[in-house]
Image (tube, rainbow, N blue to C red; front, side, top):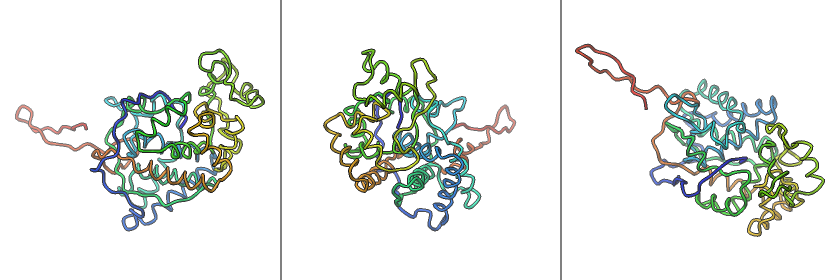
Amino acid sequence: MCLLSFVLCLLPVVISAAAPPLQPGYYAKSCPNAELIVRDVMKKAMLREPRSGASVMRLQFHDCFVNGCDGSLLLDDTPTMLGEKLSLSNINSLRSYEVVDEIKEALESACPHIVSCADIIIMASRDAVALSGGPDWEVKLGRKDSLTASQKDSDDIMPSPRANASSLIDLFARFDLSVKDLVSLSGSHSIGNGRCFSIVFRLYNQSGTGRPDPTIEPKFRKKLDKLCPLGGDGNVTGDLDFTPHVFDNQYFKDLVNGRGFLNSDETLFTFPETRGYVRRYSEDESEFFRDFVDGMIKMGDLQSGRPGEIRRNCRVVNDPPQVEVVVGGFRDRKILSR
């Protein structure tokens, strides 16, 4: 969740009684090999580019927090719609959309127009964790894909890498996610990389002091200073923990030792209400895995209840309907936009 700018008061309600029920094995009859296909494509993608696992996993966070898990994140901009890909939290940050395209292509070949892009994100995120050495779990499926996306909604909701634990607790509470969920789900940073852009303020001007964040362990700070010099390339990336390709509890061990990459990471250990969970997870990987799975399932339950469809292409909504209209006595055909 290496994310930017949020306004808590604008958060929409994303749990709706009108949303269709989600269930394990949703595609057992309509597309029985769906989950095997997703895992196979993910395995090949991660062999080709190890970072793609962490990148795909992050898609679930960025999709589900903005109007529920509906695949809106995947929509490209159109002349009439600014989508979420270029929002402050996503631009120059989210990647591996092409992996979702590959999964969708494989599923469309096996069972056309059956599996939603929203469900692909959920399955692929789970597989990214499992294939990185983390826990495996049964996912609930049956989501529909949104008909639109909103850059503004993403900008208003997603938190900043500068966020402190208190503001993150408030944010998660809006989605009925607990302090435990916040800390365990932050463990998603067990794999992957973050950009220098997200930490230069920690290194050179924490809280406007003109000084580095005093919670950074000195040797680690020197390493970060070298990686991210003042005025350097903000798109250079560093490891989010010391084992960036293995999903384990090293992330929490690093936080205990003052080696959290992001401010929003390290604040979980310096803040009293979250510190206990960080310490417990640093000592008990099995407990972290259990709580992480519970949090991912709860986050996957977020739905807007809005109308949806099964997209044939995850980047665009399906073709709008054609209707016949009579213009000046002559029949004409007009495409109605959504």
